Image 1: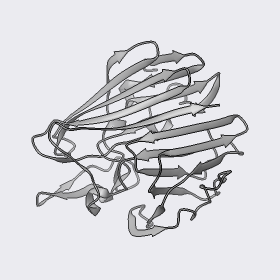
Image 2 (image 1 turned 45 degrees about the vertical axis):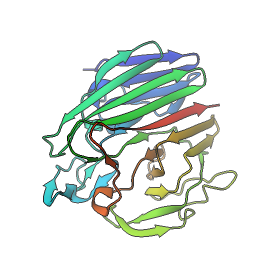
Image 3 (image 1 turned 30 degrees about the horizontal axis):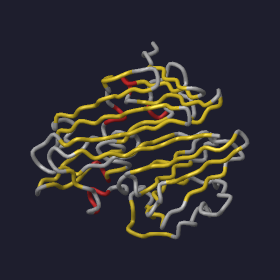
Image 4 (image 1 turned 135 degrees about the horizontal axis):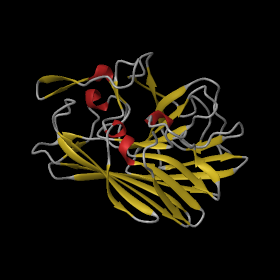
Length: 285
């Protein structure tokens, strides 16, 4: 049975939202042309979505395990067959509609600090706003615990991918990963998988890319025969590029920290009562 969607519109822009299945964006079009891939009708699987939120961490926590205050904590793996905990809780949780208007909505997801063994209570909010020139998604997290919490945010958009697609962005390095997809500590040149900083960008290689780029300037462009998609992020010093061999999947994910940062000492801390945020602006011509 299909779950009820929120439908947003402003000018040429249209968006569909599925709060109950992970706070998902299920479609984003401009003038009838897809900007993000559309989620298949009837699906509630976040991996089929147009975009999903990552909170309270991004990407992988190795083996679903982390140490905190002298205790070894185990999270349930949530991305079979991988042994890791991935992308946080938000993308697999119900979000409540806090506000809905013709061109905007705000969704809320809360965690009470117990199961599934994330020790801190928090409230996450996701606002989707359309205007005449594009779509802005803002994801925020407020620490409701009495102690500082490690906290991360990210967005996982599935951009339109065509045979002609060229990707352009600038970054400082690529984080190397092992066969388990966990960072090795080595940093590679940003051109390792293509010269994406070149004036015309670069095509994607046929092999899998599932790597995080550090020192990102917050901007990215995808060009193809249907036009140009422009991304501009705030609060995201890193860009995770996911481009598998599947010819229709391209993800440019703004994230606040590197994979497995909670175990590598790079996870930002959020003070009690503090709110952190990340935003992504999507435009198309």
